[in-house]
Length: 195
Image (cartoon, rainbow, N blue to C red; front, side, top):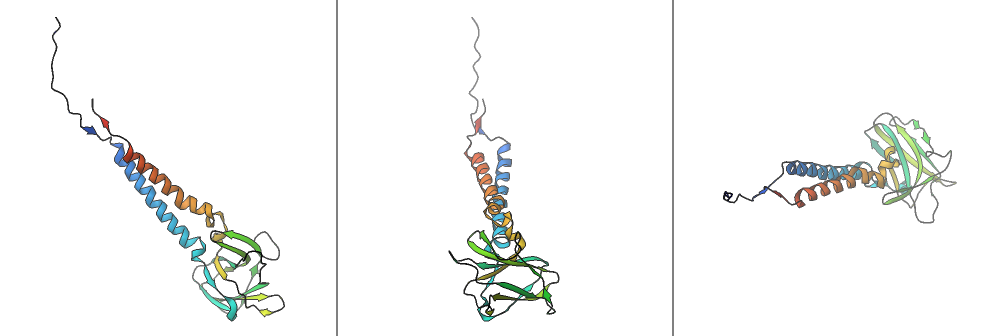
C-alpha cells in the first residue's frame, strides 16, 4: 500500500502580476498626453486661436510678439466668392510689408477647409520684428473694403496637416484612445491565482 500524505489546503488568494501597475502608469500617462495634446491643438493650431475681426471700420492694427509667417483668411460663405481683392500690411515703422499670394497660386484666393472654419486664404506676410502691424483689405474698385465677412489672421502652421483633423487625431485622439485601451486592459484583466 502506498502511503498518502495529506497536507492542508493552500491559500488561493489572487496574485497581482507586477506588470499591472506599470500598465496603469503608462495608460494614465497616455491619457494625460492625449488631453494635453488636444488642448495644445485647440490653442495653437485650431481656428479657436485665430485673431478674428471685421474690417468694416477700415484698417486694423494687430500686435505680433512672435516673428514668423502669418496667413490672412476671409470667412467663406457657401456659394460665395471672396469679397476682398487685395491686402496691404504696414510694419511697426509704417513701412510696407510684402504680402505674398497663397501657396500654390500666383494670384487670387485659395479655398481652405479648416476644422470648424471654411475660409479663403487671401495672402501671407512675414513678421520680422515684433510690434504693431496694420492690416488693410481692399475690394476691387471700391477702395478700402468694408466686408461683411470675418477676417482671421493665424500663424502659417495652421495651414499644414497639423492644423487639420489629422493633427487633432495625432496630438490628442490617438494617445487618449490608446491610454484608455491600456487602462481598460490593466484593470479588466482577471487576476491570476497561485496554484
